[in-house]
Every structure is written in C-alpha cells, then in structure tokens.
Image (cartoon, rainbow, N blue to C red; front, side, top):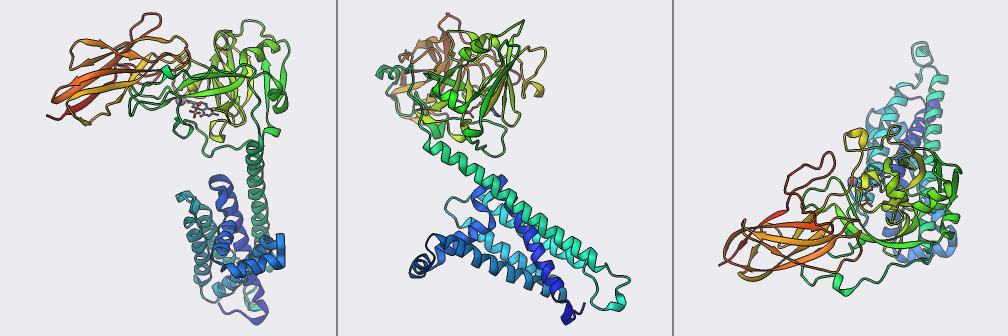
Length: 512
Ligand SMILES: Nc1nc2c(c(=O)[nH]1)N[C@H]1C(S)=C(S)[C@@H](COP(=O)(O)O)O[C@H]1N2
Ligand SMILES: [Mo]
C-alpha cells in the first residue's frame, strides 16, 4: 500500500502504540515471573555493562544521581524512534516493521540471558514484548485508513484507527505502571526483610549438645542448612509480602476475635524450638524432611487470648493468597507441643520462600495440615465445616507424621571397600521420640545401632552402626522403635493419602 507524505504519522503512531503495548505486556510478565528482567531494565543494565569506563564516569559526572534517568531517557528515545520507523516500514512492506520489533526484543532476550543471575524464565518478559509488539503492529496496520480518499468508503475510518492505536498505547502505559507497582512493592518487602532484626527470644532453645551429632561422613546434618531445607508449596512465584501490610486475624468460634499487627507480634515474648518438618509426599527414604531452629510465638497463647468457645475442634489457617490448612485444635492448644507462629528460622528472619513474615510450624503433623506459610488468618472452627487445600484433593484430613527411619550412608548403588563401614542415618517420630534403631544385612539378624543424643522430642535423631562389610552385593535395611516401644511398621503404604510407610532398604556392593 503506498503511503502518502501526509499520512506517515499514522504508521509511526501504530509502531509506537505497538511498542508500548509490547513493553507493557513484558513489564507485567516480568512482575509475575522474573522481576529483575523487565525489558527496559535488562537492556539498560546491558548498556551500562557495555559502556566503556571513561564514558560511564563522564555521564555520572554530568548527571550525578540522574545518570540512570538519563540512560532511561536515551533508551526511551531510541526505542521510540525504532518503533516509529518500524511502523512506517511495515506500511511499505509487510513484515519489515515486525522484524524490527522482533529484533529489538531479541536484543532484550540476549541481554536477559547474559546476566549472571539469569535462568530461562529471564528471557520471558523480552520474548513477550516482541510477540505482543509484533502482533499489535500487524493488528493496527489492518485498521489503518487508506491513504487515498477515494477508498475511504471501504477502509476503516480514521477514528477507528485512532481508537485502536490510542487504546493500545494506553493499555501499554497502564500495564507498565502496574508492573512497576508490583516490582516496587516487592522491593519494599525485600528492604523490610533486610533491615528487620529478629527479637531476642524470651525462651531460648538449649545449645545443641555435641552428642546430638554423630561423626559419620555423609550423614544428614542434625540441623539442615537453610539452602538444603526441602521446600514444597503451590505458589508459582515466591510471594514477597511487606510486613507493614501484614496482619493475622484470629477469629471464628472465639469470644474475643482480634487482629495482630506485625509490630504487636514482635513485641510478644518469643520462644525458640528445634523442630523437624516433614512433607506427606516424602517416600520411604526420601528427602522431603528437614530440621531447623524456629523462633516464634506459641499459637496456644493466641488462642487463649481469643478464648475458644463451643465445640470447635480445628484451626483453619489461610495464607494471604488463599492456600489453607486444617489443623486439629488440640495440637495447637496443647501446652506441651511447640506449635508456633514462626517469624525466624536458624537465627534469620524467615526467608521469603519460607513464608516471610510469618508462618505456622506444628511439631508432629505433616506440613500440608499445619505449616501454612505467609499465614494471615486463623479461624477456630470444626473439621465438619471447612476442608484444607490438599484435603479437597484427596489427602487425609488428619495427618500425624508417621514413624520412620532412613539410611543416608552408604548411598544406594555405592561400591564400598570390605571391612568396617558406617551404616548411618536419621530416624524420627516427632513429638514422641525414638528409643531404638536397628539395622539388618541381607535378611539376617537385627543389630542395634548407636543413637545420638536427642536434640528435642520434636526433631529427628541420628544413628549409626558399624558394619563389617564382606565382599559381594548386600541389602541394608533399617527400622526404628519409638519412645513408647512401638516398632516402625514393615507394611508398605504409598504417600497418598496420609504418608508412606515401610522399612528403608538400600542396595550396595562391597569390592573384594
Ligand atoms: N502458603 C502455603 N503454605 C504451605 C504450603 C503451600 O503450598 N502454600 N505447603 C505446605 C506443605 S505441603 C509443606 S510440606 C510445608 C513445607 O514447608 P517448607 O517449604 O518451608 O519446607 O509448607 C506447607 N505450607
Ligand atoms: Mo507437603
């Protein structure tokens, strides 16, 4: 289609509007999946990286703190010129403009992926900018009024075009602002977390006795290093809540419902407890169990303050985004069970992925019925009236952690040297305790293992047994007995609906 000299501005406007819509879509995508990777930010960072040192210094000298603003203005001008050019070229030759937009987005993708902290999702915002931008350009071109007045009857009207182009630009600007707001809120949370000082515990956990850890290379550490702590949640992106916006509502079947602010919570006397947390999806011998030192306020005292009434039998906890868990009321009112509204983990504020600013931890119950992260609501109610998130998916309503034990050393499939070898691992039945662990080789006799000192009744315990390994293939098996004298069942059951059972068995070969 020939473009008259009077009408070049319409294709240019289409190019600009398409670019704005694409950038807005990219900004939203960044806010959702990769905050640090909005197209402008990654390209800007790449420009900073690629700018020679003396030039950078000159810019900083001239613009001072405005250096970033200067960079973004330059970038905006470059993008605007390219976008307008893309529109004009697209009008002359279909695809040419779209290729320019896609090429610009490809620069963003390359800049994203070149960043040290990049994963594949880093490329998503720029890719979306390109796809939406190119699509919008083609879309607007089709709504372009004809340049030759004679054809004006059959082509879309000027006004229709202006509506579409203006609409696309406006949506793009709004999306960009929205994406920025989300990103800003998240960084407010990050700032708040980084300056937050955990309150001193009113009741500290005792120091870890040396005898609680056994000296065996490869054994599971008694306290799980934070990066290795297992993680399970349904949240697509790690939520970053600003504690100033956080509060916990305690209500339902209570005399005095109340709402606790972050400030009030931090003024309450905190307790420290070592607690092992386990996931119901953990297979026999699996990794979905870990131990930390938690700092928090007993949920029991919150419930006392609210004054539970009637025949309530359950506490229904809800996270800020609607994830829920139903915990037996008795587990939360028991003065001998350290059910916590936790704000600290291993002397740090909760990491964002762990529920910052606050989560629940209940010793002895699987996480899905108790350990709600980013918790904002506790409703005292009845099992008959509410179902937790996973219970509606077929998991059991009541889910105490099953007694279990695991062989960590030697690893399955290993070839060992003949002679003395440690067979070692962990055993647990939180809130009850373990009194004995036994190891069996090749269906032979059971040998009692050495147990480490128990750190608390709510944590796992390490064990080890010295095996005189003989050449050949062997099967090692472990079973635990709890503090009430009950032996771990050999009966095999699947994780669904309420946790796996069976004796962990490991096959190894011993070299001759
Ligand atoms: N908000 C929220 N809380 C949650 C979950 C979740 O998906 N969303 N998963 C639960 C499950 S199934 C477990 S096992 C524990 C895991 O806690 P972690 O990720 O800190 O190990 O959190 C629980 N709390
Ligand atoms: Mo879980």
